[in-house]
Figure 1 (cartoon, rainbow, N blue to C red):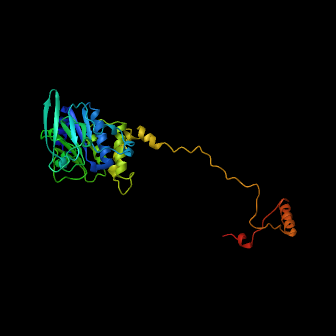
Figure 2: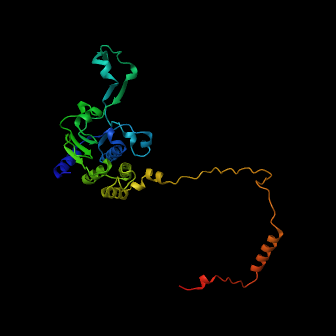
Figure 3: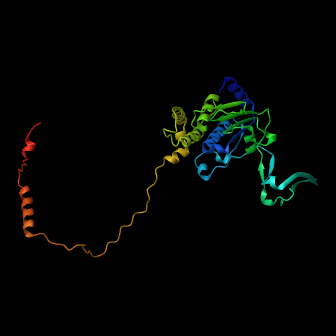
Amino acid sequence: MDENLKQGTLEKLTKAQAILVAVSPASGFDGLACGLALYLSLSKLGKNVAILAKPPTVSDAMKLYSVDKVGGANQSNNMVIVVKDAVTSVDKVTYFLDGDRLKIVLHSLAGSQGVIKDQISFEQAPPKADLIFTIGFSSKEELKNEFIHEQLFDSTVWIVNIAKSILEQKFAQANFSNPEATSFSEICAQLIQQLALPLNEDIAYNLYAGIAYATENFSISKSSPVSFEIASWLVKFGAARASFAREIAKPVQESKIQPQSQIQPDYYTPSTPYEAPPIEEVEKEKKSQEDWLKPPKIYKGSKSFDSEY
């Protein structure tokens, strides 16, 4: 990061009261790991931080710390009424006071069936952010369409964008990108290093998990020297000591269920009739066994073994 942009980001970070971390749905598990690590790190500074991202799957929720914070809006008193499929059913919205009750009217679009109760839900809006960290977005329009309400997003907000490629449309005041990076988590770890943000076991583990996922468990074809350097740095900061890491490292317990032995029948019927060996062979074998019991017994090999090479 350019030194001027670095200082500008640190200045905004120091003054910011509310910080928003927005993760693009297209960034996948790696982007979510990066966003949650950044959320935890910024929270360590005592800031009011909210993270917006695609709701994680059950499987992802068991692999990362603080997934329960996704979509949360700390200390926000703003309620948002969400109407599903509003474009095809709502013509306009009006409101009026009926005593002390506010009534909001959703006027049906001509030719539509209007809005039903199942289309309406409620969300608590995130507080207006003084500083926004975006992960995996390519434009401001994409950011607005995915998460940000217009009233929460103005030209005075400082944006730090984390990307794996150089963007044609630069919409952030500070772009932190690296086309050679293997993952968003790798770039996020470098950002934490440069800004000297807090780092603990949980943060280190989230970043390590993101890099491991993006590189297919550090496959040679998917990794880079920097990937291994960052991973080593994260291990030094406790990634391997995190409780999730210890859970993964636990050996699979052997089943206590003993295999049942097959029940053998009380009788045995040979597949072929048994034939006793001739008496001559029995006597010969017996004599051979007795002969070997008389010491000393010296084995004499053929002449081919006597020669020295």
